[in-house]
Image (cartoon, rainbow over all chains, first blue to last red; front, side, top):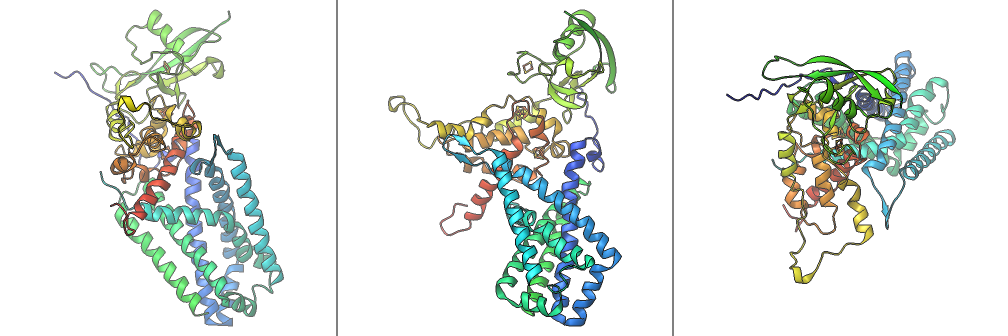
Length: 131
Length: 114
Length: 247
Ligand code: SF4
Ligand code: SF4
Ligand code: FES
């Protein structure tokens, strides 16, 4: 008789991510994609409306500034920040840069990303402010 | 095991994630929060927006951002579905990548007609 | 030397008599500077000879003493008691693996995967002894050195949710080791590893939770290795469709 009887501990396929803090953080990053999807849809609809004329465009603007619109965009903004910070944090892992015998420190790579973020943000704001 | 074609959506996901990490916060602020605060009313007026989006370079950049955003979100939502315990991966992939295709096509059509 | 009594809650499973695992608590008189492995050794020697667990080196190099300590996968020989001020420590076998007995888990699945990624140098050119050694610059060594540090302790598998949910996933340590050889200037085996590494069950199954790298006692960063591999194998895949590309 085979005396072996390995015991497999069960894992819930639908709630495993509640068992550790790091899994919850991961899921928060993943869920940002839901808000990216909805926001992208809103933008695409905005472009369609823009093509349809002034009244249609105004209707889109009204929807964006409605209470539900504002609440959605505020939440989406928070998730956008979550996406940005978690993405930057992971960049040095996914993209290792080697100069000779040295690996470029992760802090430098992340810092450069924040620099670009600031520049891009400023550019868009100036564009919106001056245009 | 065999080599998988998942490389294709992954590249779109990764490229999209990178572009969005730079542009998304300020974009959501500009188009979603600023109007409610009464900011950028000139920039978001019909005339300025039509003229702005009428520029072919702007069209190209917007198309790039929107396409990558669609595919980034679709791929990540596919992973999400798996993580929430939905195991019908093929069906999920067809639906989500299908939606991303619709989004890309709609964006292209809308941009061309402005 | 000061002593402290630690309550060690150990998950026990004796296949010949238990239907399922249960916790057994040992009150262990411990020295201040002990690690969890010392406490287990004390139990084994002085209190309960039936307790089973793996260890060998007691200095974080053999990789055999990986176990869950208060829910985190750790090397028992590197988990200092002074970091557990409550005096109560819960010890369980590594998550995501079947329990063979007490703290010993079944490793067959991992060993199979390790072999499947061809973890050895597949040389560009076979050299005879007369031709001498394969030369490598310090910079070339640096490119993969970090990924050689893995001691197969499997802490990363114990915390990887994707492996826990679907054991067909090749998993962090094996994929990081494949990356180690792919990054080696003497190696030309990336295409040969492609079938396993770039399969759906390989790198593409990883969703970059990053948990593996957080717990790795050797700072191997398997999560980073896998993302870099996605890029390299992804480029291989795309270029294979170009004229002259290898399919
Ligand atoms: S990668 Fe790190 S955690 Fe995983 S087996 Fe190797 S040493 Fe252990
Ligand atoms: S990064 Fe990949 S291999 Fe590491 S824990 Fe996450 S899913 Fe698993
Ligand atoms: S006993 Fe060897 S690593 Fe802990």
